[in-house]
Amino acid sequence: MPHRPTPLVAGNWKMNMLSADGRALAAAVAAGAGSIAAELAVCPPAPLLPVVGDALTGSTVALGAQDCHAEASGAHTGDVAAVLLADLGCRYAIVGHSERRQDHDEGDEQVAAKAAAAAAAGLVAIVCVGETLDQYKAGEGVAVVERQIAGSIPAGASPDRLVIAYEPVWAIGSGLVPTNDDIRAVHGAIRARLAERFGDDAHGIRILYGGSVKPGNATEILAIENVDGALVGGASLKAADFLAIGAAAPAR
Ligand SMILES: O=C(CO)COP(=O)(O)O
Image (cartoon, rainbow, N blue to C red; front, top):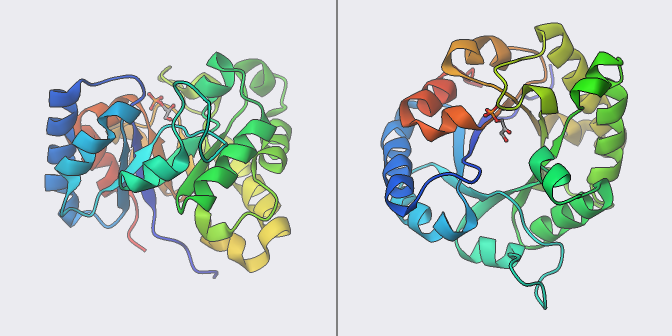
């Protein structure tokens, strides 16, 4: 049996929370994290990173960002450099979330450039992939995800600077979840593609599932082969729910 990595349960707060709520949520997650074997991370909106980072001080909970720019600095109004995220204490940066692919027209090439920038800044990129409902219905899920994996992981990527998140677009915020067999098939395909690129090191790359993960389905999902954690949206906005999902990850 190859060595399995410590699961990662990351909360993507998306465009939610004001400073007081964010501080309180982070403090509650930090307070409950001690007994959880999985690694936990919270990814607040960028302006909240200092507040949330402060609330996490002294805890085991990691700080993450929801995006970064592909360039290290320069004339990019409104964007945030990965080096600044690292400077603010981030360990992770989500890149290529489907909401950014949709809302900001981000393609695989740009996602790969962002992942490279994140790694260059010392961050771990959480590279998101996932098919739409039409693609799922057409039976193209695995092929779409394989294409995204091929295009969204930068050339020369280091496996220890990489996490993959499989988030079927149709499962995000919908309450719909793929069958266990679907999840197993896609995660298995991702692992196989990673193995082609990284050899044995592919087994150390965490592949997260995301899309309507809740306390009620987390144990089942997190037990599926090649599922090494979860990327949680809505349920990460309540400390008790997020901690329950973290506690559902198998200890390794
Ligand atoms: O998009 C997601 C996390 O990045 C998933 O969101 P939900 O957990 O709200 O479905």
